[in-house]
Length: 93
Length: 213
Image (cartoon, rainbow over all chains, first blue to last red; front, side, top):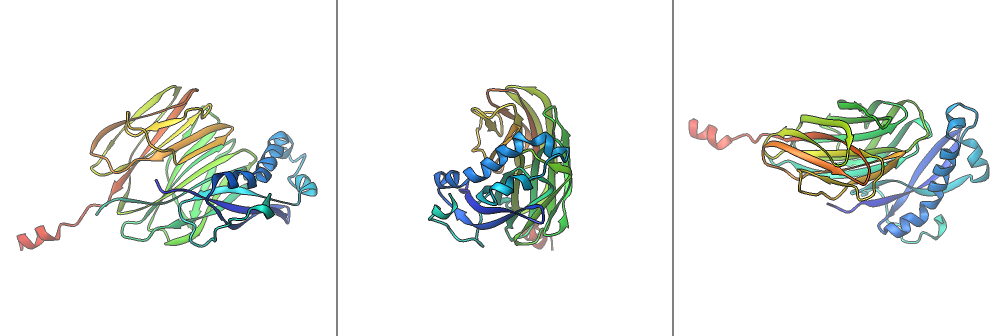
């Protein structure tokens, strides 16, 4: 099986929608996991507030009030021809 | 012509909306096909498009894991990198798993199979044609020591393995011989299994035609 590349994305809220922008790709899974802490923290917050979010008591905008931008990966692909490799993850952790 | 598996993309996200999208690169060749497997907790998938073209539902399973489990196909998809857009019936704040795989030399979908009686391990069988591949998928209570055998006794490297409240994983077999194929999934919890046959495009025998002429 061809190896997956981890697509590093920026997450932010625009017009009350979660917007994901692909920045490049990572090969190293350890680097990907370091960057992904930001996204996993968001997922944990959503999980903790799932009922309120589903019932429109809360919106995801509350999360972005304190953390306006975070990074992570949702997608892995064997072909990332249109992206460039990111080797320095310092700006994203 | 030979059935060839092309690019794959694995996506796991918490959509936080009723739609989500990401990119996939479709290989070019004759007999192009695109297949998508989605495990979607809490709501259902209404539609899937690739480069704006609607995909066709192959199978939908309403599982005991409160997860809508679907397979979608598209013949002659646009080549290159395009957007795969998934639309659900409602906003989803759970983890959703999407696996995308391209093929060339493909005649589309063949037989399908499903065993929704949770067990560990769990098996089901599908009868396939010569040189078909099988997309095998599992949903289970956990993914500790998760595995898939296509066919039974032949373990495959997992091509996706995602947390979706429960867990889902799977793989694509290489081309197989014809006949009934029993496949198996397991973990340290109970599981269910779904299979989709991917058929090879028949070769036109021009030499035979010449001999007849």
